[in-house]
Length: 72
Image (cartoon, rainbow, N blue to C red; front, top):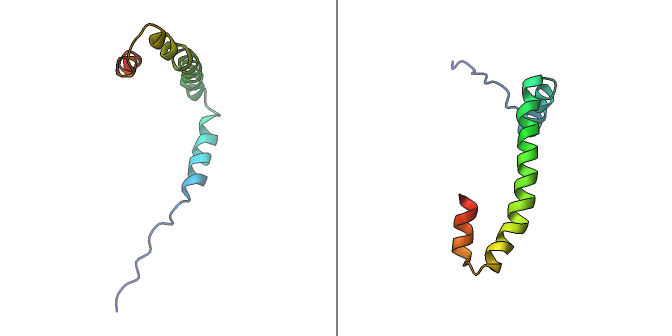
């Protein structure tokens, strides 16, 4: 007879993600990059996305040039 093979249970991805996040927020090393990424993300989105594109347009730059400046 063939032996039955048992595989490990498949975790639910959303449950695993939130479980891992729950463990991470309890540790100090989690918060330093989280806070710095939050600050950089807020300032970059606010300044570059809102003001730099309009500034480039006001100075006669084309859309491709604006994208190149933002990418740098």
